[in-house]
Amino acid sequence: MADVKLFGLWASPFVRRVQMALQLKGVDYEYIEEDMNNKSELLLKYNPVHKKVPVLVHNGKPVAESLVVLEYIDETWKNNPILPEDPYERSRARFWAKFIDEKCNPALWQTVWAKEEEREEAIKEACQNLKTLERELKGKKFFGGDSIGLVDLTANFIGYWFGVIEEASGMKLVTKDKFPDLCNWIDQYVSCNIVKQNLPPKDKMIESFHTRISTGSWK
Amino acid sequence: MADVKLFGLWASPFVRRVQMALQLKGVDYEYIEEDMNNKSELLLKYNPVHKKVPVLVHNGKPVAESLVVLEYIDETWKNNPILPEDPYERSRARFWAKFIDEKCNPALWQTVWAKEEEREEAIKEACQNLKTLERELKGKKFFGGDSIGLVDLTANFIGYWFGVIEEASGMKLVTKDKFPDLCNWIDQYVSCNIVKQNLPPKDKMIESFHTRISTGSWK
Image 1 (tube, rainbow over the protein chains, first blue to last red):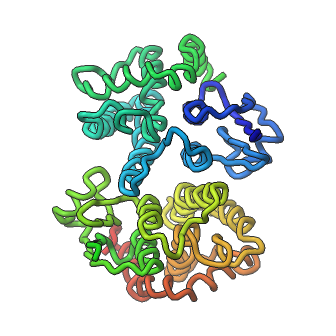
Image 2 (image 1 turned 90 degrees about the horizontal axis):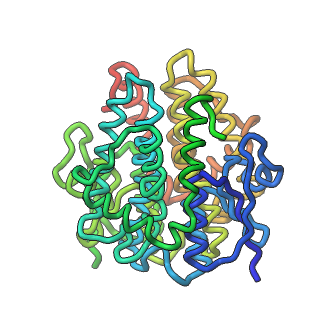
């Protein structure tokens, strides 16, 4: 049997993407929770460049960076593909995954953590990015079509984490009247077994969010 | 014959990566130079999200974002592979390409364009990133091993552009005593046919650099 280990952090959407993908493929693995305030020697050995989770270790070889890990998983375990087969469709999936990671998620994050005077601009930018995703979803159940794929896994912050942050902060950006297709996607998304079985508990996230608000750091 | 068009900008390392890859594969294509101060309707149609070059249009279908384009090219034209075959080696190549685009290049850029009071920190960060690349190159001719691959194409800013900027600005970071393997790689890199035939002329780049210094914008 393959020796698969995952170094993670319970609240990290980047780690949870990988857990969802491993479950989709039916890969058994050992999960190791990291303390980011006191990183293990193994984490520093396996990801000396970024010193971050997730790190997937397969037969002793480490793979870091969640999008890189997702592609690795898809190329290693071929069942239940995460990426489409056609090169053009694959390029579309990679384009949107990159857009979510580099544009959409940082903008959403800024709506919560930007300085007061920069918040309005942050909200405007986040909404523009969400509109772009809304257009991409038009007429589709998932970004991947009828089933979950790379883009859906990558969009998990929008699918769950941001909603919890909205609830905890009292702000509401992603509404059914503004983003009907995205809201529909969120409903479908969190109903999928591989997604819902790999989401952090809402209560614990809200508690963690309030700790960050009051202390300036995550617990 | 396949209908291949590339929307580009002569000075862009992102565009030149794609040109190098197309030449490596022996793909004929039509090149369309964009004016970024007056973007064409076709560019806005083909890349409505980012409105940037490069955009590769293959049989009428657009692919944007240079790393996504490189993977598309490698999956579409199978000769002279850009990525290795083995999934783990592929993950390593993607990891380093991402590191260069997200960490190394922005840090190098900052050494030139950061405000005076932030420059020292920028230089420190850039040198740390270059040291990381130096370690990765140890004992290898190219990042891809004996021949040029995804990481080498992605590192073209370090392989050529940054040297020209150093010359134009009078700053010198990448020296043989500090980065012997990287300097050796640069020498090998710019000697490769597919690289040297796709580099922008140094004189024109230096002129463009000085225009930016004096006017605040590229010409």
